[in-house]
Image 1 (cartoon, rainbow, N blue to C red):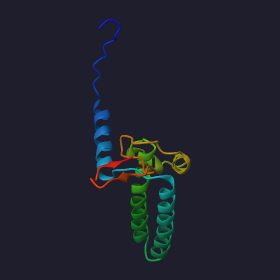
Image 2 (cartoon, one colour):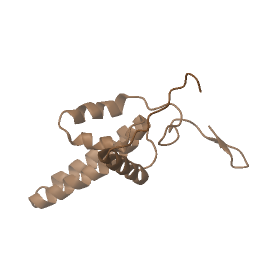
Image 3 (cartoon, one colour):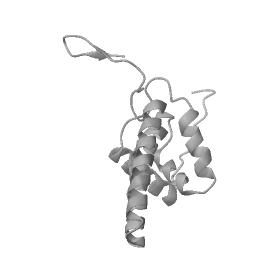
Image 4 (tube, helix red, strand yellow):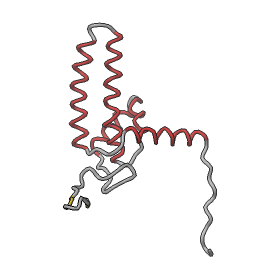
Length: 140
């Protein structure tokens, strides 16, 4: 057609393919979205339980301390990824929580940035009410 530009055939690099596959795997394991209030409550619970667990097991041996820290980090993975999904970001950004300094910025962002209004690529808006009638057809 006249006036239309053809889109160039762009091939993804090997690194982009690997990143996309890893991202897809993480989204498949942890689907859905989480709003800010639920995220804050869950992170407070994980922090309190994790702190008690780490402090309790810290007195036994350094190995048990390391195991407890790993368990707490894995427990934080799920709410962080769901919250990232709510702001329409890939769960791969969770790795940024391991970067000192940037983790503070990301943590503040996850607490205060409003999620995407309406459905996004990761699921429905967790704040939208679903209305179902007798024929089980739900509407937002």
